[in-house]
Structures are given as structure tokens and as C-alpha cells.
Image (cartoon, rainbow, N blue to C red; front, side):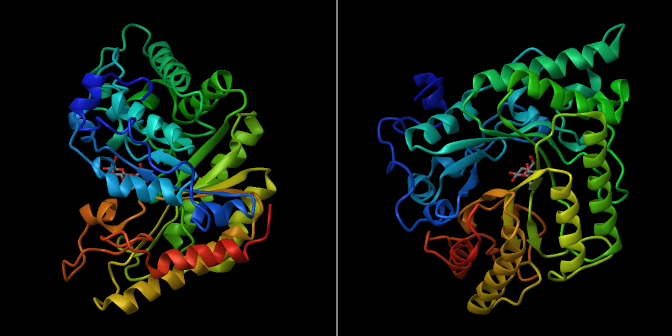
Length: 385
Ligand code: 9MR
């Protein structure tokens, strides 16, 4: 286990992980092997658990403590991404400290099992997810300079700790989906909304000349005016990067699909495939790569019956993947959790019948679901890249 003390490991309940690495690399027939046959990689987010912005640095336990789940991940995946552990609120209890232990444990697990590591995220530029101290911190007589110093130092320090990360979500979710405009945070108030985002990418490129730098967001394939506004806002941001020469390589497509539970539209997916293809054409036309960073299917509005629920989730998975895998710019597909019991969706707006959701490829007993078959079939049908 690299970069994590024995005491730190014990505190996190992780002792023994390094001593007993799971199977090396994903097994033949795994989702990663099927992806690899087409020049792609498959992976998942996994977390050790960490409290939100109010409790930075505090461990609350998590899926990574489950050895059967770790084995499943090592079996199926060629890459993992820490679900929360690299976020500012998890890494930065204050302006001076870095709490690397949890992310170190995940990095060591990836290494021990021959898996790659993605980074999420150097700047979740969203007021809700910045640590609370950034609101009250004394930025001194030249606040803009202090914000720039803080962010640049953060980018350098975190990227230097994990040089093995081949792809970083440098900036996450800075486009407000309701307006298409850029979000404001304690940082941007001093520096500018556009400038802070540009700075993150410039600092990232300086620190990591050969790493894929990603702008990551949840713009979706739905046909509503609000979703259209979100896509247009993301396109404007990507165009601006090109005009200003900001070093951004790839668009991260989060791909939380399924339930459309808020705003003007509720119910299950009603994709506008023509609008979605137009969007992907514009993105790739500007020379950006694509990565699916957070795939899952929220089954909240679907009827309780499990076989039909799973079939509908699988159908939507296949439809979504067939469209986006037709773009050879797409090189990686990551799900946001591999097994239902560890999906973040269990902790968000419940189903009307309060049944557990079934948004991921494996069920609570880690048995493969029709969604896994759909991903496998989509990889088999995808053009090679
Ligand atoms: O799955 C994550 C959950 O455990 C966290 O509580 C939450 C807030 O940090 O973030 C979730 O992951 C989000 C990701 O970082 C960015 N895109 C949306 C994801 C789901 O909310």
C-alpha cells in the first residue's frame, strides 16, 4: 500500500487490503475486456465514504470496505475513479491542509490490481460543493491573487501526488442547468466566473503536460427546453475554451440517465436523439474527445416489478450507449457505482414505493443484471477505435 500509513489504514478499516490484492487486472469476458477489444476501457466510481462540505476530512465508512465489492470491481474494471475522495471538501479541511489518506487507499487498490485511475475533480465549481471555509476565509488585501495562489497550489499538489492519473475532471459542473450560465462561488467572486475555470485548466496543463484534461458535466439527451439550455451553455463554454486557447482535451459526459424528476418534466427518459447527436457532433467537431464519466439509470418512475424494471433499464442503457459509442472519440466508459446497494441514488429522492433503486449493472448480491448484458452487447456492437 503506497502513501498510506498503517495507522491511517487501520483508522479507515482498510488494513489487509494491500496484503491481499484481488485478481490482477480484469478477467477475460469482463466488461473491461469487452471494452478493450474495441480500444476502450471500462470502470467504476468507488468510495471509502466521506462527509459532505460540512464535515471535510471525516470518514463515514463506505463501499470500499466491502471485500466482495472490491473483488467484483477488480474483476470487471480496467479503471476506477474516487467517488468523493478527491473533492475539495474531502481533501481540504482548511486552506493549509491536505487529507490524502482516503484517496491514497483507492490509488493503492488500483495499482495493486493493475487498474488505471481517473481524477475527479480539481475544481467542482459549484457553490454547494466547495468547502464552507472558502466562504469565510480571509483572502487578504489582494483576494484575486490569493484565490489564484490557492487554486494553483491545490492543482500542483494534488496532481503531483497522483502522477498515475491519466485523465482528470479538471472542472466539474460549472454550467447552471437552469440558465446555461456559469456558476458563482467564493472563488469566482474575486477572480471572475470564466477566469477561475480557465485558470484551473491552465494550471492543470502546466502540472500535467500529457494528462487528458476534461470538462465534466451532466448535460443530458432529454428533449426539454431546460436541457437544451444546459447543452447550449456547455457548448458556449467549450467554444470559449477554443477561442481563448484554454487547454481542454475532452468533454466528460456524466450520463445519469433515466428518471427526469425535477423541473418542467417528470417521468422516465424521453430522449431527443437528433438534438443529442447534434450536440455530440458539435463537441467532437471542435476537436474534443468524449468520456462517459458517471453512467447510471435512475429507475425511480418505473413500476415495482423487478424483471420489467430491469428490462427497461437495460433497454435504455443499450439505446444510450449505441448512440455515443458510435463516436470513435469515446475512449472510456465509467459507471457511477457497479452494484445497486452502493449507488448514490439510494440516498437521493426515493421511489414512491420506497423500494431500493436498481440503477447499476449488478444487484445487491453482486449478481449481473440485464443492464450488464446491455453494456456488454453495446461494447460488442461498437466500432473499434
Ligand atoms: O455520488 C456522490 C455522492 O456520494 C456525494 O454525496 C455527492 C456530493 O459530493 O456527489 C456524488 O457524485 C456526484 C459527482 O461528484 C458529480 N456528478 C454528480 C454525482 C452524483 O450526484
